[in-house]
Image (cartoon, rainbow, N blue to C red; front, top):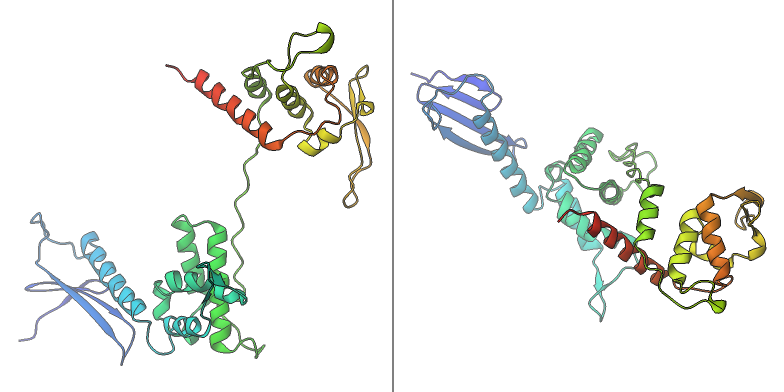
Length: 321
């Protein structure tokens, strides 16, 4: 007497003696299959549901993933994406140099490791090149993105796939061939977080820096720190390193509290104009004038080091013991 088999869900069947989970990959004559057998109850003795039981479904998904990995490691059937990638890698070898790096005159060879380590082990590697759909490529890209891969990395893998498909299908020589990568938009890069610092925090960081330094002629001030003065001017005026070095005293109107910004040299930038300054900026420029720092060159690396040290000191003082 034939067994009566009841379908619990896709690929999961129950008969009078137990439950069979079956995963199939491919089609005849290259059909691959794996199966697992379960009793009628789970490990806690509770009967399995005839609906979508979690443990059985996970088992089927794992069996299917194992089949895909086996096919990917084997390079895939003839005509599959995995086989095309293997052929492409053989046609575009990397030539080692004496220093251990590689000669990369052909930019396509630069994607050698990406193709081998990502697309060959992806579920899409077992699919025939001619049968790959745009939705499958897009689903794989979204899966990588959801797994935490940066958009630039995902976009690079998309370009690598398009490169292989162009080569495997001869699309470079035939404009009528449509590839599954055509029409897929690159993922936009993440929006950069604002790098500005709130003024109260800025003032607190500057306050942690010492005022020690060289003595001032005439004794009007006991000592000063060139680095701190420069950082104060840059912080309150927004001037960059190069702009501050080129700053001329004639461009500062201390009486009216204004600073002249020259016209930009590149492109069609705005013309030069006088802009209003905050009182802390005027005070910092007065100290800059008293120290005679106009036109003096200074090291950006030294300024950055002092600024990072001031931030670290501010953070350590703000941390409760």
